[in-house]
Each structure stands twice: as C-alpha cells, then as structure tokens.
Amino acid sequence: MRTYDADFKIEAVKLANEIGATKAAKELNMPSGTLDTWVYKAKNGTLAGVGTPQKTAISLAEENKRLKQENRELKRANDILSKAAAFFAHNIRSNANTKRIRFAFALPQRFGAKGSSGLSKV
Image (cartoon, rainbow, N blue to C red; front, side, top):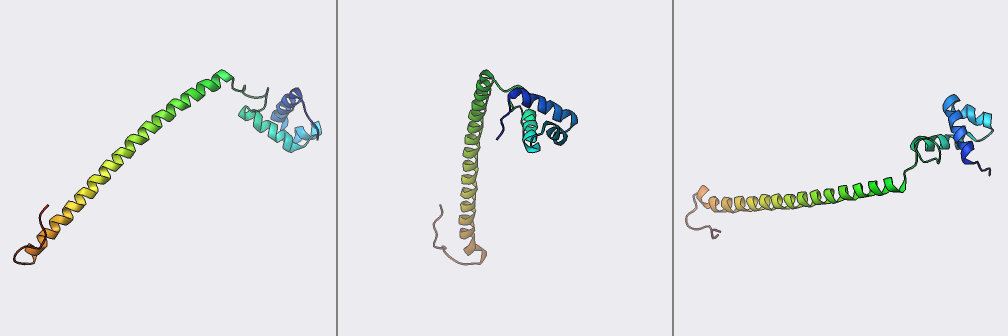
C-alpha cells in the first residue's frame, strides 16, 4: 500500500478540481477512488491542509458550549410540553367521565322509568 504526504494530497486535489478526478488520477498514476476520497474530504474540510481549515480547539469548545445550551433549552421545552399534554389528557378523561355519568342518570328519565336508577349522583 502506497502512502502519500500532505503536500502531494493538496496538489492532487487542486489538479482534480481543475481537470477532473479521473483524469488527474490517471496522470498521477494513482487509484481514482483514493483521489475521489481526498476531494470529498477536502470539500468537507476533513482533509488536513486542503479546503476549509479544520476546527480549532477553541471553536470546538465554543460549539460544544452552544450545543449544551441548546440541549438545556430543548429539554426545558420538552418538559413543559409533556406536562401540558398530561394536563389536557387528564381534563379530557375527566370531562368524558362526567358526560358518561350525566348520561347514565338521564337514561331512566328518557325512557319514562319511575324511581331511582340505582345510581347516586356524584
């Protein structure tokens, strides 16, 4: 397996961007898949010394801080929404039970039954 230094990779990616990866790979006598990988990494900034600069430790720390803050905010919002959903679900169940009880007490009156239905009002 052949290894390539960083300078060679940089120049190979530049050449591939100018004339195309397949043609550049033939000219450099190297596998086109390897060069395609370098071009892809260069576009994403993950090939050292090529494309966009790699993130520094400071920028990574800042991004980590921002993501932690965003995570806290999302957890807080999720907690509020969960509590609201539970509150409304309880009210819906409560209202449904009340309607069932009212309906049960109205049955004897609807059908002309005399006396109590055997249920006590709640």
